Length: 287
Image (cartoon, rainbow, N blue to C red):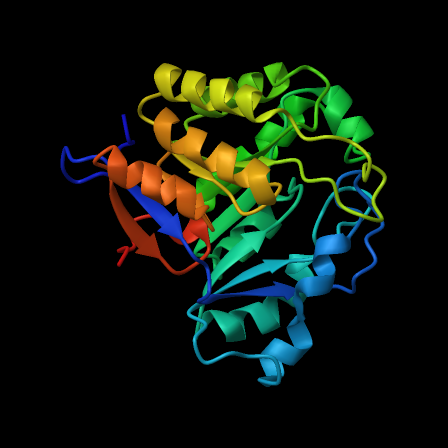
């Protein structure tokens, strides 16, 4: 019920508090892709690569880095252009590379030389790829990008619930494709209306829809390691969804609502804590 990473039969959930992972961008804050749900907004809170390499933006508590950046019109984050700097950082930190679309095998090999893990977005239908991301690829082309990276390193696919207009049918299809392709862990995000983006007025899926989706995925794929990731709405929505996620059998929650942890304890579920980005929890110990 709680995924293959468990070493015993006792149910356990990981509370992820990623204070030991710094967020770094290899570009500026203007994103040519301008995705409907993001619009480059989240790049503003990331430290510039040059400042981190120079030591000006480093934090003593960091043990790892999430490295991302603006995408070019083809959906690629230009990480390969900064391999020299990334190699330098990899001497001191574990790196989680958010690559965007990768179709060049040489690029995949070179990035794998410095990456501890790759984080890759994935959707289950072409309409969402076109409408939200502005990308012309088929789902199978995008899946091939993840499989290419998987040849050379560990890949953690991310699926954002609520981007499609199919009431989570597209997301269900995305999970099936990933399982068939041999992926064993998935991070679920939930669409969060963000001021200044094209979709600022769009609503996230109802908590009850998310609950039913998570319960169905857990039942259909008991072998999967499932994480509820950092991007999701806050406030009462988060409290409700996080509690549902615990009941559904999610393995890990990033920044979990206190009510969800209390619910876990009432259900006899052991709570462990991990202090880095959730994608790094792959054999690393939780406290």
